Amino acid sequence: MYRAPRGTSDILPEEQAYWRHIEQKVVNVCHLYGYERIDTPTFEDTRLFSRSIGEGTDIVEKEMYTFEDKGGNQLTLRPEGTAPVCRAYLEHGMHNLPQPVKLYYMAPIFRYERPQAGRYREHYQFGYEAYGDGAPTLDAEVIDMAWQFFSSLNLHRLSLNLNSIGCRKCRPGYLATLKDYYSKYAQGLCSDCKVRLERNPLRLLDCKQPLCQEVASSAPRSINYLCPECDEHFNRLQGYLKLLELPFEVNHRLVRGLDYYTRTVFEIKPEAGGAQSTIGGGGRYDDLIEELGGKPTPAIGFAMGMERIALNLKKQGIAIPVLPRPRVFIAYIGDEARDEVVKLAARLRRAGIGAIGVVGGKSLKAQLRQANNFAASYTVIVGEQEVRTNTVVLRDMVTSEQITIPTGELQGRLNTGLR
Ligand code: ATP
Ligand code: MG
Image (tube, rainbow, N blue to C red; front, side, top):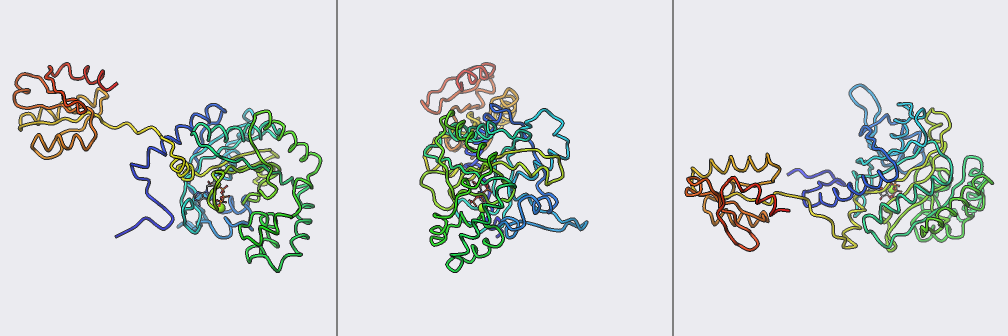
């Protein structure tokens, strides 16, 4: 027997209600904030990711699904959503459009990770990006949108963490100080952090090992090393978030797993969460468009994991709308009636009334059992007598009441009854 590859899963019909519900909220919030959908290819040139995400990051070093196609091209399955959208922004000359250009996506993401609850090798992200506006008002709006999205899903008890990691002017100075500080503790760091110290010192701050966490807790804080411009940006952003009454906390240890971030970084997680708890994260990436060959263009984005949203909806016991399904079952008695019922079912469907019929055992009892299994609201029964008189029996499955009506009245009755 074949099984889905490790770290992947089938989204079965009973799960789909969650997905459609989340998607519906995505579409609503994007409309409210003026984001338009973009879909990019599932794979891209490998260099797009290694250049943008950064060579020393976990994603590029350990997690990418990279392959060579039959034409010798190095390709990678999308390990995150931002770089492809940036590529599309550049490729289609979107800098000529009125800025900010606001785009969103819902797409599968591939990362070779150690699978566990809330962590998969293929997962879906909803993300959005805004290009061409460097003002902190946009940061506030992007954060507000994430917060409103979760509110619209009725997700409660979330925390909003905020930090600023500076820009290419001030970050090198901070990183030097950070390295100095960590060098004193190098012996006691975990093996990953020993590598981070050399290759990606910012990531030292979010190591999950208890000993490393202790070292991180008294590490120098990036916001104390910001240049005047970054400092002003961060202060104004906090002012706007207060105006919007968003309950943010500055978290000095919040850094992100990708190299392209500048200034603002933020994350949203459930209050009582474990290691796989972050629902979404984002930040500014003011240099990325330029690094990918465009002219300097400030930008900011956010991405969240759709499986983790669904997990939290379940954990918090939030009711979601059920998906519509046919509520009319059509049963028949006798061969002549079966022909009638084949036509009747088709006629109802053409009129926009979902119908299930001509299934189940031949006996009426077996068919009514089927109707119950399908949770039908009404069963329409046609026998020889009904065929002859051009009528149908309409049975209300809740009250078990039955009436005989002319076939021509059925549609009207169902339209009223199903409302
Ligand atoms: P984590 O710290 O949990 O590894 P991350 O920083 O790698 O998350 P991002 O790259 O910011 O995550 O991706 C945005 C969101 O996508 C995450 O906040 C999370 O909700 C979700 N996500 C990331 N990786 C996975 C995964 N392997 N499986 C399921 N969801 C994921
Ligand atoms: Mg990760």
